[in-house]
Every structure is written in structure tokens, then in C-alpha cells.
Amino acid sequence: MRRVLWMAVTLVVSSFLIFGALQLAPGDPASFLLSGRSATPEAIAAIRGRYHLDEPVLAQYWHWLGGVVTGDFGRSVQFRSDVGGLIASRVPVTLTLIAMAFVIIMVAGPLLGLLSAARPGRVDRSILVAGSVAVATPSFVLGFVLIAIFSVNLGWFPSMGAGEGLADRLHHLTLPAIALALTFAGVLARVSRSAMIEQLGQEYVTVARGRGVPEWTVLRRHVLRGAMTVIVTYGGLLVPGLLVSTVLVETTFGVNGLGQLLQYSVTVKDFPVVQALTLLTVALFVLANLVVDLLAPLADPRVRNR
Image 1 (cartoon, rainbow, N blue to C red):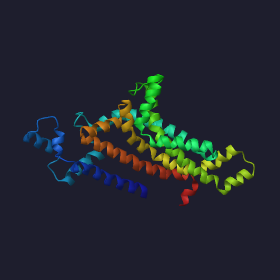
Image 2 (image 1 turned 120 degrees about the horizontal axis):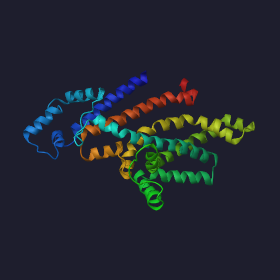
Image 3 (image 1 turned 180 degrees about the horizontal axis):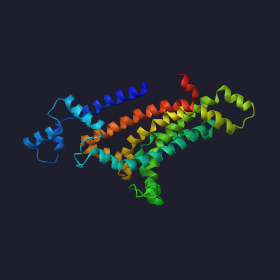
Image 4 (image 1 turned 135 degrees about the vertical axis):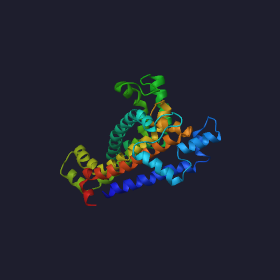
């Protein structure tokens, strides 16, 4: 309950900071809202009244927060539609992309970390170098490389769009998911390697080996399980990070999801959409922390006594 309370406090404070960013933006918000249209004094007065811009900042924030609590994020200036509906229409594509990338990360990261920790020498160095390259390479660069190889040269996967239907969508999102996952998988592999090397030095691992337990069983039942708390903690924080990273990946592959919507909304200064997506990202970060706190005792019962 204490964590839930702090989560609520964090969301309220974050919502105020997000809303305050609109007030700190250079220029009059009403002028941005009327961009491309006749900005007569009457039009400016009408738009200020409609969006409560003629009221004090705290009153404006209260109106906006009240709408957010009831699911009303306002109306998009560019799309002339409800922000909540606009976001909801793009959620399935982005969720599918994030889910595919998450599976790749949570399978490849720990396995590479385990292999690296268990095979010091050439294998370990090769995985570390490959992981470092993946971490250092921006996702949009990885996207262009994947498009050049698997779309242009080999023709195995489409280079643009999200597809229609489950099978077609999975086919279209394979390359974007790989581009989105590689950087995080490289980080998780290094994190997993460090945690597993620490577990390999524990006394219970030495005892298990001394009793003649097969090496794979030692790695799977003792080393991997002992490092699971670290893996779960990092893995739980991946989802909001993946959501942020979809901005570059979806733009690179022309995927009509939340990331592309955020990029476009920032470009055209569609503040209601930017505010809603930013608050959604913060909420995911906070929720991910809460879920990790609840799952950690399941991965390692010793955490319950801390």
C-alpha cells in the first residue's frame, strides 16, 4: 500500500510537470493552437476560452487533470479528434511491437549472459564485443541495416508498414522488433553476465559441483535462478523504455503506432497529444517499478525479509 501511495504521488507530480511544460514553451499556446489559421483577436479569445487559457495556471491544470482522471485527454489540434481515441487506435500496433521485442530481449539477453559467464575466453569476449556494438548502435541505424539486408537484398520481410491481421502483422513487425530489441538485449546480456559470474563464486555452486551435479544443471537450477532477481528487475523496466524507443523505430519502418504519433505531434506542436503520451510513458515507468517490487520476492524469496 505504501508503494501504491507513492506511485499515486509520483503520477500527480509528474502530471503537473508535464502540464507545466506547456506553460514554459516559448510563445502563446493559443497561437500554436491556431497555427495555419487566421489568428484574429476574436479567434484567439475563443480558443483561449475553449482551452481555459484565460484562467490561472493552477485552474488550467485542474481542468486538465480532471479530464485525465475521467479518461478525457482533450482534442488533438492537428487530427481534430479525441486524443484518447487517437491513442487507442494505435495502441495495438505498438503493443505488438513491444511484446515481440520484449520476448526477444528476455530470451536472448539471459542466454547470452549465461553463455558468456560459463565460457570465459574467446566466447565471452565475442559476446561482450557483440553486445557493446549493439548497445552503441542507435536503433534507427540498426533498422536501416536490417532493411538493406533482409528487405532489399533478400526480400524476406517488408520494409514498411504494420500489416493487416495477426500473421501479416507479425511478419511486418519482425524487423522493427529486432531493431528495437538489440540494444536492450545487449545491455541485459551484460547485466546477466555480471550477475551470473557473481553466482558462480557462491559457496552453494561449489558444493553442487563437488557433489557431481552436471554443469548444465548447476547453471540452470542455481546460477540462473540466483541471478533471476537482477534479470526480473531490469526486464520489468524494459517496457516503458521500449515505448520511448519506438519513436525512432516506428519512424524508420513507417509503422503507424504511438512512437510515430509522438514524433509527429512534437513536430507540429500538438500539445494535447504530447502531454497524453508523455503522461502514459511516466505511468508505465511507475507501474513497471511497482510490478518489479511485487515480482522480486517470487524470483528470490530472500527479498521478502529485506
